[in-house]
Amino acid sequence: MLLDAWRIALEKGLSNAELHIFGTGPDSILLKEKLPRVVYHGNFSELNLASMVREMDFLVYPTSYDTFSLTVTEALASGCHAIVSDYLRGIWDREEKLGFLEYVPRDPVILAERIMSATHNLDKYRNQELKMKQYEYMRDNYDWSRVVHKLANEIRSRVKERRFQNIESSENRA
Amino acid sequence: MEEGSKLRILFVHGADIRVGGGAEKIIYYYMKMLPHEGFEPYLLMTNLLGEKRFPDSLIDELGDRVIRVKAYRPRGVAARLTGIPYVGDAFDYAFLHYYALRHRDEILEALRPYHFDIIYFVSFSMSFYFPRDADDAVWIGSEITRDFPKPRGVVGWLQYLALLHDLARFDYIHRLSNRNIGETYAGVRTFLVPSGFRSDVFYPYIGKRKDDSTVNSILRLG
Image 1 (cartoon, each protein chain N blue to C red):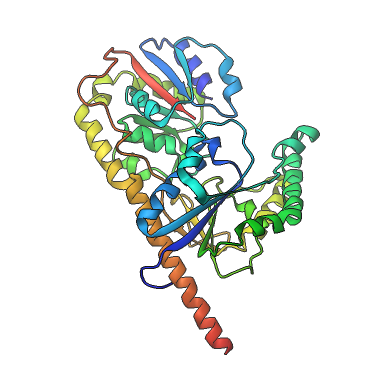
Image 2 (cartoon, rainbow over the protein chains, first blue to last red):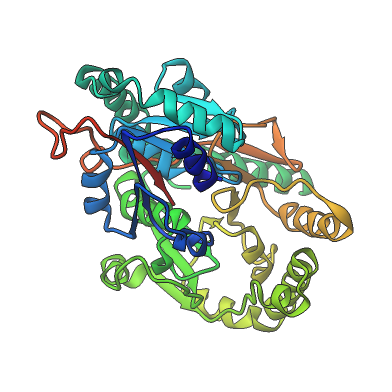
């Protein structure tokens, strides 16, 4: 899907962009295909990945199966503008309203057009003030310490609730 | 639950954490950070390991809180044998349940020294290894590894019904996003907590970029 969109964009004259692909997975075999201006990176440690992601301008993520992607979270935190598949609609709606992310249909022609138009707004997507605002929002909402704190509270309250129910039902039986 | 006492939680995952995908990364951070929140987290993981993206040192880091068991999840084997993905998936699911029935005692033996307040299944299907009436632990399922499927075709429906059967044994489902969220998830109550990131590792460039060219870099991960 992404490579199809890339091929279309190149055919339409996209010249001022590079596509960097990180990681491996079931689609890795497809990546053997050599396309111009595509760099395949494979897997990295988290630290090395982070230093490379912050050099990027956009995340393009045409997934059709994620529930809540770490990839999108980490790219948004790194200041990238995210162009994600509308399969993810409902997950990132707050971030979309804030202008950090946009949904596109899973259609290579539309995706290619969107990539091309995004590459014409370099100043906007490299604005440091906007990137920091995006980072601060992500940190305040998704930093692991906050997320795990929230999870701990949720679990604790479920355990209390369940134990209360158990006591109630044993009293009823008695 | 006594006030101030630590809650013991067991994460159950159908693969070795060193696989290092998104689910494993999430488990790793739960394991690392829940002790700061008054929890005593343990991880039961199987020996299934394909590509290893996390280093062995990660297991050492988690220490004796990792419980390893052998498991057989012939994912993809039946699909390759039959050449039909959906039929293959159904066979795989059946094999898993058969194997779980045969090896349940082995796993329960590994867990005998512990008493868990919460059992958190990262993989729904691993719940088949656990008898529901074993203790009073709260069972939580997670959609980390799968969104709820939309059944397609006869085999798809059979899988869907098997999944409903598995899910019926959970007390709660942990959802990562509010997409399609209702009061319940296949009849089981839900709560919502997203996954996270390390804000000391992932942040925008500050000052001059390494590559200050006018070439746009477009990134695609995973």
